Length: 379
Image (cartoon, rainbow, N blue to C red; front, side, top):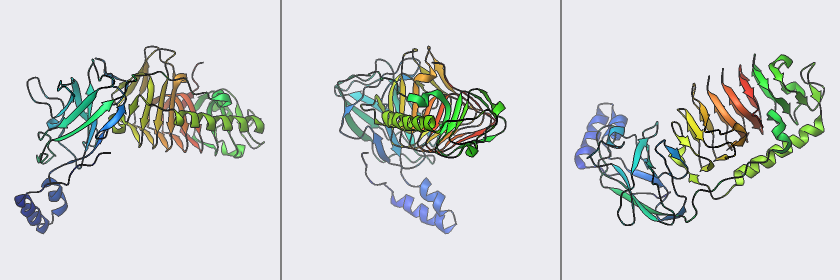
């Protein structure tokens, strides 16, 4: 990330901070009296080969939307898209100075601003300059000391489609883990369940909860009378799960990087390869829009957190079997939320009370359930 200059304070502001500190309010006043700064951007300054961004009137994003991260919470009213005739705080222009139409929104922390282009979107093999003006101010009304600009160049390869991730025998399971499945009764599972190499005693589902499917275990300690002991089959499935995870994590040339700084709630995402170097937050419902043969792959270096009562919704004929969420960190699906797609988790997958999943939960550690419905996707 491109780093910008130090924060700027006036002598008057400094004296105000000292006086406030003497009154016992030093910390809050220090923030209030300090000018904010842009501490990082995406794309970074002078970045090349940046994927093009396409955004339709329905807010369908297929690749990188420029973002600016601030040193402290900002007043969204000074940064969000303004009314016609007013100056935008966050702008994007091509090398010829032509402004790119777009909308600007803050994340839930009010520290990350995202510029989302409107069709026609960014062109391939083109230079762009992003600007954040001094209209941007923090919650105390203190503005940026000076405008911030950075430039980047898009690559000459537009959006490309992805092949599905081959799940192998792991694709015969609705839930597959290496260290067990815990459950707050009663959940409803439509599909096979298995865990290996841990003992079948670590699968805490009861037979009636696996409505349509088989519980596979490595030994005779699993739930009775429905469990089937097949250690070799499970070993192969666990191996295929690891191969699938590596495949999803290793896909190159993403169509989008760091979209929304990890905040994807409220967006409609077109098919493609999306990559984040940190966590992904679904704070509002998100829609995946595409056809029955389209593929989505989400590469996430951190955690996935879906807020309670939100939904991952499919539109246009999109199918859950073609959606792959690869997460190096833990996954938490919030209370009464609904999730779609195949989860390839390197650590824990936790499904909170009353949440539903149309997809597969494939975890390299454990899966935890709390009165959930998990249905493996149609093939």
